[in-house]
Amino acid sequence: PKFPLGGMANPVAISHDEFVIAPPKSAKFGINSLYKYSAKTGKWTTSIKYAEELQSSSDHNIAFDADRKRLYIHNRQHYMLLMDLQPGHEQCIAKPIKFSSDPRNWYVNAALFVVDGQLHTVGGMHQYSHAVYDEKRSQFIHKYSFFGFQTGWYGAASALIDRGKYKMVLLFGGMDAARSSSIDAIYKYDLVSKKWNKSKTKLPKELSFIACVVTQDQKYVILLGGVCGAYSYDDTIYVYDIEESRMLESKVKCPNMQHKYGAVILSDLSNKEAVLLCSGYIRQMLAENAHVPKDIVSVVKLLYNVEWIHLMQWNKGTHWKILVADVITNATPV
Image 1 (cartoon, one colour):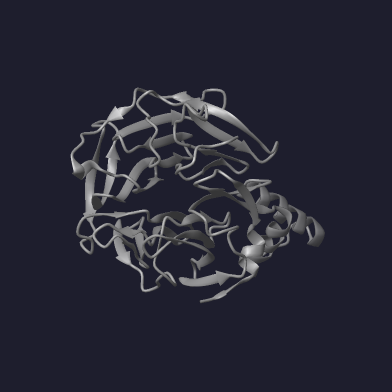
Image 2: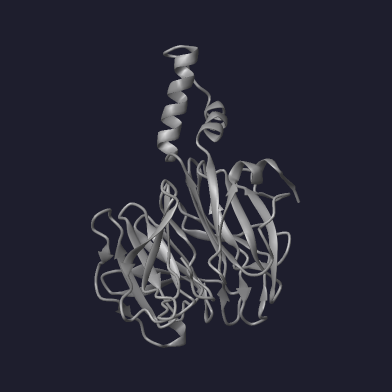
């Protein structure tokens, strides 16, 4: 489909082989709904129709609750939309929730993510705080302030990690509203202690509006493109090694430096399906009761269950695919 020029919310994977995007509402382009892409069919279809309150804004924030199959969209007009993406029951859950127009509630271009069924927001054009959404009261409750910012911190890339002892939310870069320039900081939110810390590791350059995806095994965060400094675009692809807490740079580049990107990872199978199939196959080849090391399963799974980064260019809606294995195997420490 043709999407209007201008920004759209980041793509969100709703299963291992499907993702949705929320392009700006546009009468000219006939867009008034979510769009869903299926890797199985290679086709786009329209999904849930937008509510009237969702005006033609290019600054939607979007997050997906995978357990409840619930999509949250928060827009520049201070509305929160809740959508049910259960197969066969796709619909807006309730009337859009209107927040006050007080600048303290301006979460435009904030980092939005869901942890244990709760919606979190960090930053915004006039915000530098972490807040959690209270569904009963229909409002965000303040949790923490990032005092390194004077007016706002927006356009940071977020990554949720929940694997073994690695339980955290990572925020990469973003725009310091007071300086009108990108930053190179990485912040970590510990999901156990509920505390924020600034990482000693930094981005190799100051970046904001980075496209961010987490590999299926949750060992790497892949960062694609973004705004470099104040207004120039970047085509570099970085890989953040979660276990080593270090940055790598891939020889693979984004398709061009014309605008920002959004990205998701899709695969042939879910992570659970791939692990079961691969470990079962290896056991059958070795012996029925043989112990199979996790590292061997991971390698075989990468070969068997191919992961693709689906990349969307914000200003044109152009759609590309990049092989995850190519990005990682061609990455070296910065």
